[in-house]
Image (cartoon, rainbow over all chains, first blue to last red; front, top):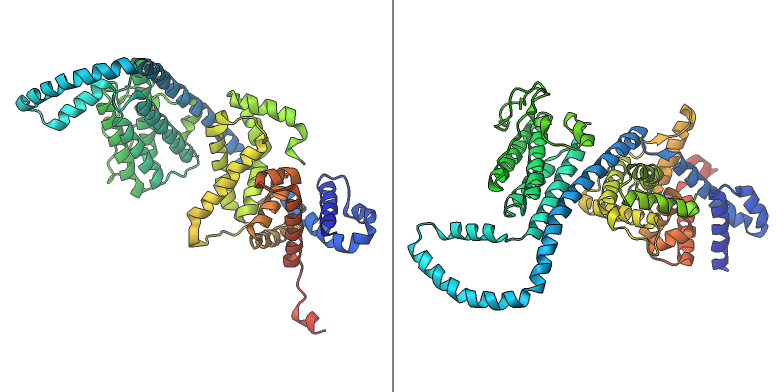
Length: 295
Length: 192
């Protein structure tokens, strides 16, 4: 019986929520249950009315929609880049799998020879052991292209996230810290696997540099040093990854007169160049350009 | 009311959004943002959290929509699962802080004059305050049914419960809300 009542309540409630039946009509359909049904249906009516009048603020909806679509474009671009890098890696992995057996025996045979050679080299080398390991790691592609692609994707994703936060005027210390960390991580990923990837990394690092440079102007005093850290880390990442064209020079004819080579100091109020100067020239997907003016 | 009233149309829009159509993404946003917002508001009882979390949910949708697959659950179930997880995650972050902002501040209530607005805000505040005191399952049912506009079947699927069970929870939730929101007689009336 109890179950039956709940079925009836739901039937009346659905009809009411869908505008097919009023409370009175439902009560007339079930007169024997009217006493029990009425207060529940009236309460449901109040809840429904309260929720129906409740909408997100229109500015949130409108600006949010623009940001949503802009972010979609950025994410697609980041994925496109990452897939390019990963595709290269996938074919290489396939090659490795097919030739694993041959490689295994070859490597085993070579290992003995290499150990002997390494011992001789180490005995006579002036460079310390860590430098030697870095050289080998870089030459052989280790820690691997997949790792590089993943780190790059994470870097792009975090950059997009902070750009979105900037649009909302909500960049916080944790955002900048994460951006610095993913940039460091990218710098430690080894060299970009091919020219195309290197180009993408160059664009992304320049984009980040320009973005953070401008962002620093809008940050509260206590976060400026964090922005400076990010800029320094970005510069270092460009150096580590062998990016020559960094920061990218201004495009001729835009009125820019100089390229920011030094990040803003935390003690001074950051004074990036004129609004038309170099940082805005870094490749940046069009929809996010307003990020630098806040939102 | 049900989001599945035009399931075929929804599927076309979702597929186009997955393929990268900005127009389709914009349509999904317009269609679902208010519902996700109301759902989160019903769960958190805080308009500021609802704004932030709803935006966060849609960013997660962007990141994950390529991986969305049409299986048994419709798109809305997938979307509201993300919203549910966002609420849980926010709750964990807030932890024992017990932070809350005035619910009715910043709320936009449509098409109402000043008197109606005040009345609606009072009613809404009462209902939201009461909803926060409901047990979790009851609060979820209210959020899905009235906030997200889900049917009982959709609510059951989203909560991983049987429809009969959801109807029972719904009954209890409405009865409890009625008890809590019902105007209390004042002391004089009680004596009389």
